[in-house]
Structure formats: structure tokens, C-alpha cells
Image 1 (cartoon, rainbow, N blue to C red):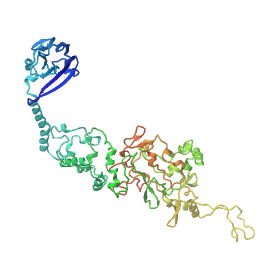
Image 2 (spheres, rainbow, N blue to C red; image 1 turned 90 degrees about the horizontal axis):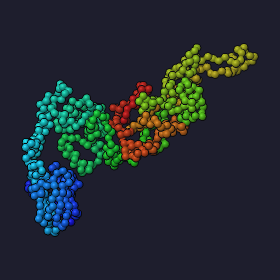
Image 3 (cartoon, helix red, strand yellow; image 1 turned 90 degrees about the vertical axis):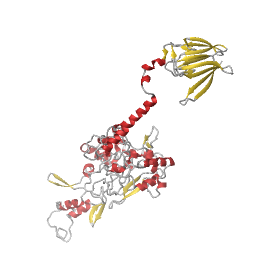
Image 4 (cartoon, rainbow, N blue to C red; image 1 turned 30 degrees about the horizontal axis):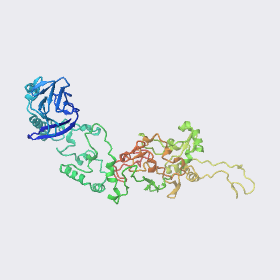
Length: 589
């Protein structure tokens, strides 16, 4: 048997929409649940209300399966036998189902929705007077009324009170604009939490996004990543869709692309500033060489796939201390003025290790000799390392004592050649007594005679100064002797605090690794070796932002800053204060 279900719906303009669907079978179900063959979304209809089955050709049996009955030709019942040729009308809540037979012999069930519903409890229309629908205006009128209320309360009222409010620094912290809190999309960040009740501090003009000059009124030391013209050139031509969107944004007073608010989005909750995504940097740096042919920087878009080799700033002339920027693809050599072999000091079987064991209790050295941490001491925040200090890190083995006066041991002052010269010249050098008697020997071979020989060292203190500043002297163990203005001296020493001007590395985050994992100090035989790892070493753990689980996802912001100051600029704070070498100014850039 084929059932043809015809659903007739009426639009707001009175037009009827008719949908037919054929169902082959012997049984149909009727109810409010969507799983029924005939779905009637009416609360007066039970989820599974009735069942229609075929008795014989053309005859149907309708049975109520729930607690409620149904209506057949105006009479309420729980079961009925219907001849499709004669036809009948079934009532379920507000729905009417007309039973008939179509031209091809299929049983036709035509479904319409009526204005009223007849059930065993009576006409529902009689109850409308006791419901909200019977006393309230229609949905359309209520929608318009509520829309007007919302516009007045949350748009017109804040605008009017803002225009009428007093402007100026004398205004109290509490905002004088009524209902402006309804426009607040969220709490301010931790950095701006003090401005929670001072919306006009950032939103100077109504209906206009925050301007860059407003940000700079407080953040005076923050500058652009690069000149605006070069930023625009590096960004290149925007896609057609983005260009159109930016034109619309500009029409409403929004700055960009490249405005402060493109990165520093507010009202995201009381959190710290989140780092921008990798794509933000790749938009410019991914094709930087083609967009800016004169740049010295290589293209970078993903640390694991597209990133140039590191470029280090090394000192090649210790006198002028002018740095050179060299790629780590080459075997780097620097001239820091020292003659220091790391391998000699880290050899656990060498003489340095044995000496470190002997004085270990005094200096805190381990039982296996010197380790990197014995000389390279972390800064207070654990990010970098303090400059090597002779008295603290070296004098335990390399003593600068030169004289004992009574019970006091006099030591040379390290780092001051002029003071060292004065100390040695002022020292009391006693003439050693000759190994022979002062009695004059016969002949001319004696003191005061034609021939004499002194078995002791020279008495001129200047000889001691030359020895101390010679290659084999006490200073020559670590320093390279030279002559400065004709006087003995040493080549100036340079201890760079940073090798990467525009990169950031946190040693504290890598404390689980050994130093020699990245720095080949245990095989270095010269102080001129630059013990910096290349990008290949870093990529053993770090890849781009979309790295697999076995690697560390590393976006650009993990190692780089945005508002950096150019090296050599008058606004840049030096890494080391020249007047006080021990005071180190650390900056995260």
C-alpha cells in the first residue's frame, strides 16, 4: 500500500505551499516526535499519538496509542475505521488530516493547520483569555517595542550623557556616561586595569577606534618596528578582499594595517598580553627580500622550514671594539684579547682538575674538577650570565700575590695596568747577598775588581714589570702582552653580553640540558673560538608554530621582540655600563 502525505502550509501573504511525499508500507505513526511518519509540532499532540494501519484495500484503521484520543469528523474517539474512498477528517490538536484516495489509487493524507483545536478537554480557543497570549500584544508589536527600548537605553542614553558630560582632568574616576558599561565587551588586561573606569583615556572620540597617538601619550618610549614607509613596502600589496575591508575600516576611522590595536587587542580579560601568531610576522618577513631588496635580513616565516642561519655580533678588533656581524654558517673567530683554552680547564684528568680538587672546599668546586658553572654565574633572574670577574672566578688558581709584608700578602690590582706598574715599581726589592764572602779575593776577579759575577737576580724593579707583563709572566697566562705608547701593557679584553642583537634566549628555560649540548667548550683550545650553536642545533628540539608533539612549537615571539631599538641608536640602553663594568643592564628584545 502506498500512502501519499500532502503537507499544505500557508505563508504570511496567504500563498499556499504544497509538498507531497510517498511512503510505501502498511503502517504510519502520528505524533509530536520527529521520528513519526507524520510529524505534528503541537503541544496538544502526544509524542506518539496514533497509529494508522491498512485493514484491506482502501480501508484504514486509526488507533490512539497514548492517553489522548483524536477527532474523526467532529467526534472525539480513540479508534476509528475509515474508508479512503468515502473519506474522513482526523483532528490532532490544531492539525487536520483529510483522508481520501488519489487518482492512482494511493491513500492521500492531506495535512493542514487550523486556527482552533478541538480535544476531549474542549476548544483551546476558550482558554486563550487565561493565557499571556490573550492579554499581551502580538509578537511583532512587542518586537518593535523592545527594539525601541534597547536603542534608547543602550545607544541614545549613553550618547546623550557623553555629549553632556564634563571633559577634563577634574572629572572623577567614575564615568559620567550612563549605561556605557553595556558597551564593554570584557575586562581590561592587567596592564590597563587602572583605566577600568576611565574609558575616555583611550576612547577619546565616540564611535572611533583607539588611535596610535593616544597609545603614545602614555607609552612614549615605545616606537615602531621600522619606519612606516618600509613597513608598508615589506607588507606588499594586500589581497583584493583585504584591501576592500581596510577601505571600509578607514571610512570609519580605523587605523591600519600595522596600527597598535592590530596586535594589542583589549577587553579580553585580566590577562597579560598574548604573543602574536607566527603568521603576523610572516606576512612581512616571509617575502622580505623580494619586497625590500635592500634589506640585510633573510626571509623568515617558520622556524622549522623558513629561517636564515643565525648572525652573531663578534669583536674582531679588541682595541677599537668594532663588531662584525657574521653568519654562523662560517667558522667564527673573535678577538677578545684573551688566551684562554676551555678544553684545558674542563679536562677532568688534567692538572687544572687536580688543583680544583685541592682547593674545592674553599672555592666550592666539585670533586671532578672545574665545571662551567664555577666561572659562568647566572644573573639574578637566571636568563643570562654575569661577566667573568678575575677576583671571584679566576684568582683561586691564578694568584696575583707578589709580596709579603709582615703577615700581609700584597696582591696586584687586576684590570688597572697603571696601578700594577706603580705597585711593582714601588715594591721593596732587596738585593740578594752574593753566594761568596765579601772578603776581597786575590786578583782582579772580585767585587770592585776588573771582573765580577752576581749570582742573584737583577735589582732593577723595571725588570720585574717586564716579566709580569711578558708572555710567560703572571699576566701572560691569560692576557696578550702588547706595548701601549711605548710602555708595557695588555690587549684590552672584551666580554660581549650579547651575541644576537635581535634574538632572545632564556637559559633558565633550558636548565635541564648540559652546557656542552649546545656549546662545544670541552673541545675548544682557543679563546678566539665562538662557542655558539647554529640553527641546526636548535632545530633538534624547536620547530615552527605547527610543530608535531615530539617537538617544541616555537613561534617568532618566543625569540624575537617587536618594539626593538636599533643597535647604535642614541635611544638604546647599553648592555654594559662603560663606567661600571660589573653592572649589567639586561633588556628583553
